[in-house]
Length: 160
Image (cartoon, rainbow, N blue to C red):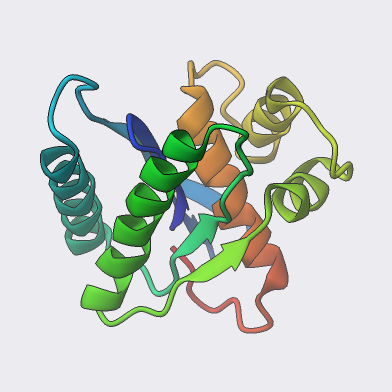
């Protein structure tokens, strides 16, 4: 399972490996919070959403995109809090999350660590055979994180 944490939109993508060791999509979507809602309630909504998805799909692994850097201190703090919740949720399910920088994820999926979000989304659609799907950017980023983690694993008997 890949997670692209955000204080307003958290992308989530769940993939599995079939018998031919090919990736298949189990789920993708976004946990959306209301900007006008107080931060603690938004963080709880992110936490509850992630827990619900993990309970439904029972992933063996969870990977998150590492924090981006912001010139706005307040934005960075809020993002850090959302990221903390996204790190806590899998731990509460007994899973130690992996973390990858945006550059690592892009390099793993596109072959270029400086790829644009559009390039990442294009590759996700091709890798996962979702060309006709309208995938939200945050969800495609989360799927990219899941694929990045898949590439880093040595034991690929079961990955979600």
